[in-house]
Image (cartoon, rainbow, N blue to C red; front, side):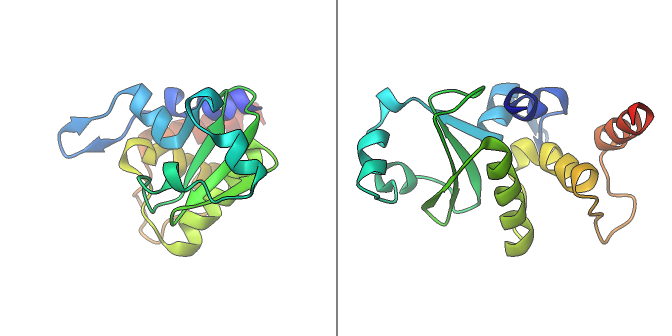
Amino acid sequence: MNIAISLLPCILPTGRNGKKRCSIDEAMRSFLDVKLASQTNFQIMLKIGTNMPKLLEEASQSPFILAIDARESPNQVFVAVDRQGLEQPSLVKAVDVCFKLFYILDVHYPWQCAVTWEFIQKVLYGIEDKLKGKTSPAVIAMRAALNKLL
């Protein structure tokens, strides 16, 4: 399940900001940021219960998912929001919490992976936008393909 979730930005088109399109790597990092424990002091910080100040002071205030050690089977998963790290029991739960934070806080999805979050919103949660006809073609196609399978 973790692999399927983490590869969504590879399957769906990357975001576009004006004429600039991001790379698949940028879209994947924007959706799920992976840090190696050896690159940070995560294990020490988590044992003493800090809020990951070193990493989060440079982080966006928008919600994002942070995985420690591996994309496929992370040792720890966090949802970072407003420079605070909220530990989650699994990647699936982190995606759930992160999506709900976007929705409750009424924050725009990061442009690099906006189509991925739109897919989660419209296909997995069944929440449509207030404006009709705003769904991206990739989300429409994925929804149709999944409906044929189910």
